[in-house]
Length: 289
Image (tube, rainbow, N blue to C red):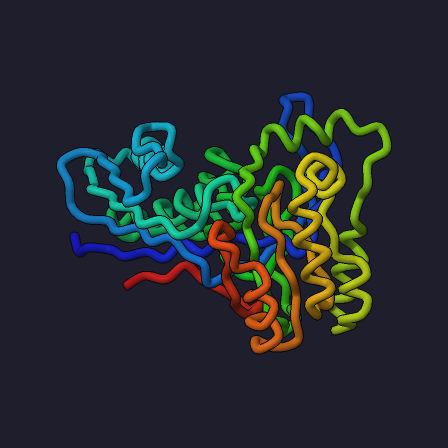
């Protein structure tokens, strides 16, 4: 078994809506996602059992980590009795709305499928991923897509804007369960028009896209985390066409016309505690080396 090195890119929400909640407690979503050059790395080597190490303090390496959950899911589904030594190198910040843990879990599914020579199709990996976490199916695909249901339905998009993005994650960490619980308490919830965003993408209408892109979680995050809203406002003043929070936060994504404009705006947020990255909106596929 040859060593595998799998890149796990961060997921970004161009638009996000929470449309309902099932009886089992899972929330129904409509999201437009793409991936960024901010990546974790998963290294897979032969091992007698399953083991995980990580270069970042505070990241669990036991069965609660989605990498281990994904590995055990594959073992159970395919009757695998082989092991693997898994090494995780983190760059995606935690509790940032960038699906870092899900990206790692997806990398484990994709990488171990190759490492153990299981021959599972993408559709089969997505089905297994949905059993582990809502963002894992998309993170197995990692190209611009409409994501629906509880995350299990992923429809790749044929058209996507050529825009440059600046991501800024402040020191505030936001728990996804907390964000959902706050949204559930809202009596007058805001619903971004995902259909209108899809039409703007199809038409190549950047002005309509800027007007329609949004995130339902901003309604509950901005009042209690004003620093996140402040980053959004500063991005707009710095030349962003529009800015939208990713996931449940706290990362804000600003959309610019050029990399130079995004880089110039980045300097305004370099306070020593923010995590920042600049990249281009483009398809990103999990890579193997």
